[in-house]
Every structure is written in C-alpha cells, then in structure tokens.
Length: 124
Image (cartoon, rainbow, N blue to C red; front, top):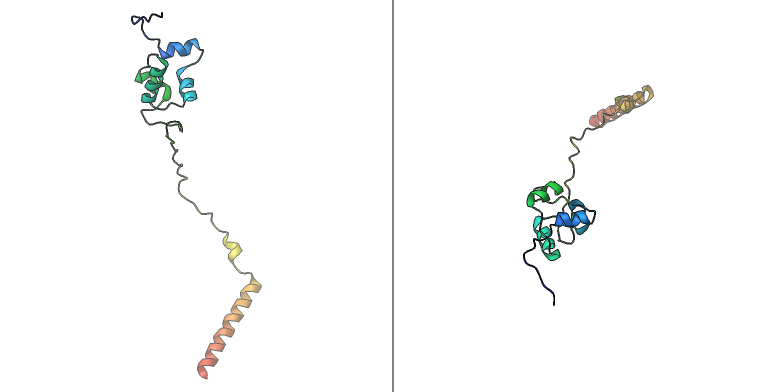
C-alpha cells in the first residue's frame, strides 16, 4: 500500500531543471513550447509547479507573441521581410550612348535622303 502525502508542496519546474543541470530556456526549446498556457499544461502533466508568467516572459523575451515556430502546436510564425529601402537606378554612361563621328555622318545622310525622298514624293 502506497501512501500519498498531500501536505508536501509541489516540486518547482525550475528546481527540477536545476537538478537535471538544465534551464527553462533549454526546456522550452526542446519541448517546442512557445506559449505560457502550453507550459502550464506540460507542468501539470509532469506534476510540478509552473513558473510565474514573469519568469516565462523573461526567458522567452516576448509578450505573448511567439517568435519561434512550433509545428507541434500548429503555430508557424513567419518573420517579416526586411524593407530593402528605395530602389536607386544605376546612372547610365551617357558617353556610350552618343554616336561616333562616323555614325553621326551616316545618320545625317540617312535623314537627308529621307527628307529628299519625301520632297520628291510630294512633288509627284
């Protein structure tokens, strides 16, 4: 026959982790726990006392919004894409778009020949 003593206080999760040479942050990471409610459920199943919400916030560094994905809870948090800032176009090299002297003469001749062709067609 086993006797249960109801007068003994529950063992704290932090003390249990200390005995196992671990800490709360590592326990949360290994268990995939990202919310305080899940931590309470896990502590109840282990039969230990839950840490305070302040201790949980101190370890996780957030105020209820998880910054880690937890597929076991069905929570996948995507980090926002950083804003790249304004897009600045690289200035084009103006000298490369200018025609050379030879090209310029060819263009002038083609313009003149086009102009003379138009004048001849109008005369007809």
